[in-house]
Length: 324
Image 1 (tube, rainbow, N blue to C red):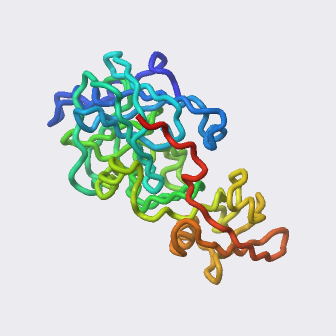
Image 2: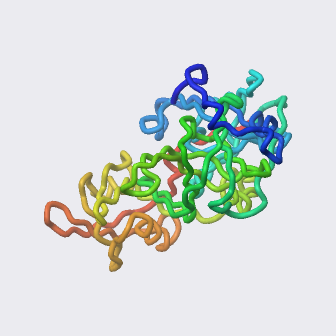
Image 3: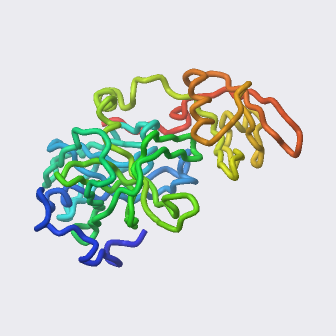
């Protein structure tokens, strides 16, 4: 991502405060910069890096910040910086693997006001939205909701109804997406080369924040949802021409231990044929909670093989955050 000194949106793409029904400055200044440092020994260090920079948004006046979970997972130290150049240390409150959302708590007061989460469910395609990363008005983008649809990620992740937006924001990670009332409806997660498969339209994937409400109390009190942990295989899977292939494996993960190899084609889970990435993950999760045995049928160099993966809770692979 470009640094804040190297770019800014032209005025034609930025929201105009005169046309809005909410305090744009308050909303934009509730978005902070997050800088996290991660140990080189961390499980996610190789994939996500040891220094992660993104955004988060203050959601109350006690220093609670909502962001995307991959910024803070396994973090050794986290610093938050406001648009007024106040820097303060923070610690991880929670990271919910199912939604991909994370919470931070600052270790002291911050000199900005928080913004409210939307109390409604999903927005509609006709809603005006405003995509803001750290860095002030120059980094705020007036965007459109292009679609609300399923999303499946190779890392065993599914959103039933993700928000797809365009034009793309170059500092998407943890950015806040506001609706026309100034309420937070989503958190930026990914850059997408194609919002619709086969169409050359770039955009962002946004995690809806209404997913937070049912688990918020668990996250604040326990650091995670109290729902049973999903079975994790450590098998990174991609879909190509309607078929599922193993693109890579978590080192020493359940899949690698069971004998799964890169390049294997996944053809079924037990007697159920593998059909689509999201359905594959859901079929695995429907077998039970973490620890359940997962019977995998694969095709390797023309040979059919039956393997059994002893799933685990993904969190067992992660360095636990330090308590404060």
